[in-house]
Image (cartoon, rainbow over all chains, first blue to last red; front, side, top):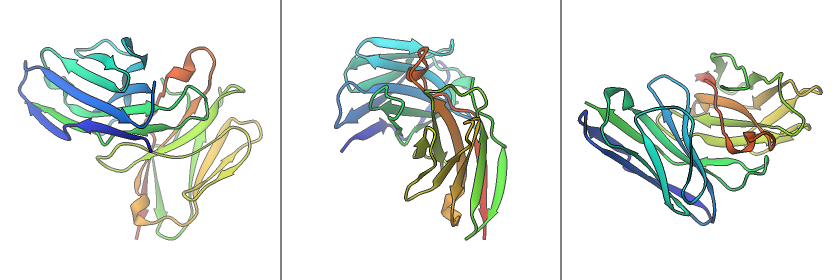
Length: 114
Length: 113
C-alpha cells in the first residue's frame, strides 16, 4: 500500500536560519507531489507542485523553494526563515492526474519561527 | 482561488445527520466534486468524490444537484470525532486544472454532545 512520510513533526527555528523539510512517498511511482502551508486559523495555501523529477511549479512568490531530486522525494527549503514562514506545512501526493484520483496527505510539520 | 463556496461554520447534534452544503456554480462538465476533512493538527483526509450521480461510502453520502452547481455532503450519524473542517473542491482534467488541488476555507463542523 502507498504511504507518505513527512518529517519532522514539529520544528522551532530562529529567524534567519535555513529550513529543509522532507517528504517521501512509498508504494507508488511517478506521483504528483504538493506542498501546502496552513497559517493559524487559515485555509490550505498551495505553495508548490511537481509532476516529475526536477519539475517544480510555484504558486505564490515567497521566501521558500522546492526541489524534487528523486521520483518519490519532495523537499521544501528556505535559505533564511522569516517570522511569517511559521505555519503548518503539509505534503500531499496524487496517484495520477485522472480526475478520479484522490489526494493523500502527510501528517504535517508545524514550524514555528522565533 | 477556490472554485467553491461553503459556509464558514455549522453545528450538529451528536447522532443526528450533518448536511454540509457546497456551491460550485462554475463547475465544468469534466470536473469532479471532492470532499476532504481536516481534524485539528492533522493532514486532510479524503472522504468521497462524485461526478454526476449521488455516491455513498462507509464514511458519507454525496448528493449532487442535477445541474451540478451545488452538492451536499451527508454524515448520517455524526459523532464527536466528526468535528473537523470539511473542504469541498472541484478538479478536472482541462486547462491545466488537473495539476492543482485548490482548497478554500472549508466549513468548520462542530458536533455537540
